[in-house]
Image (cartoon, rainbow, N blue to C red; front, side, top):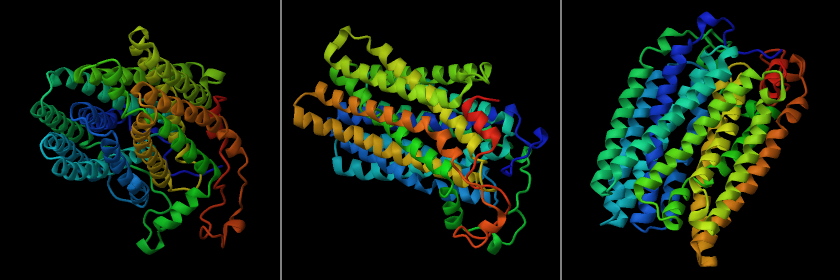
Length: 478
């Protein structure tokens, strides 16, 4: 049986109110991020007529800085409070969000100056998301009872998507008619409000829930595992390594359309800034519905095929690929295509696979060596961040390259959407193999662990083989 540092007793874990409050922090974080990755991106490409690679590179920069996530997760493993990291990270994120709008406005008159400020802004956004987002997820993974983790994952992510939807829909109405000054005003208001929502939501939550001591608590600093050794131990776990690859491929495909969907709507369907921002809200509404639907059905159908997290990961990836092929056809069909319905269905499928993946992540975070939850969450978060950054840049760059080669924006967007559909099919195969890879893990005795490259043995448990409860949670057989 694999040991964990999470208390089995409900009294020492976060209650439902604490989980919801942490979800509000995630919603506030998402409210700022959605404006920088969707609305400001569209303004650069359509209103300022800049190459899509510019916002693509900026978004990639903010994701690249999230390579710090595993290190921050390791810090939470060896001790320390998370609240200052969450509050400080949200402050840095809010400042970055405001500066990104100011930089976009400056680009209209001084491209070089605007890009220079944008680089600083998106670096702050990346640092803020890393500090607040990683610590938040570690708190959920460590301080929520195992039986509540799937529900906690759904609550936190549903609230985050709600933040996307509310922000994109509301901001879209205030942005028309568009002016650079209006963009700065709307972004500043959203950033400040989001920061204070996060501050109020997180205040006192950590102090009300004690984390039971793990085997690293109380040890001298020299006796605690180094970050490098902890990361090597986690990467040596077959299930953690395979899941990292799945997260990368699926999130790469997911985010490759993020920077081109609104420009696609503006260029092909003549959507205004407000309309295309509202389209982002429609897509995220689909994601929200998909998350709620999967969470409810998987719970009610537990023990059957529809209760399997793997089933929803595979089905969601396949559905996302089909919806993207619909966007390929939309460019040729024009106004007769049910474009908004297609975008909503894409969001629905995205929500289905992503919430199943997050629920699996919460369950798998405590599987393996004890006191490595933060490193695992950080590793998967970094994988997602790298995939998001590369996916965003890939989608934007490929649309520019395809437009030059094919001479048609419709054909260019269709090419990118088609490639994304193939990536989702690959992700579906990886998701299907998750249980098979974990079941091949071998158990090691304490004697076998002694003197291994990973360091001295800490317990006579498996570092790679899954527990029966973990297999049940992924397959729906409980």
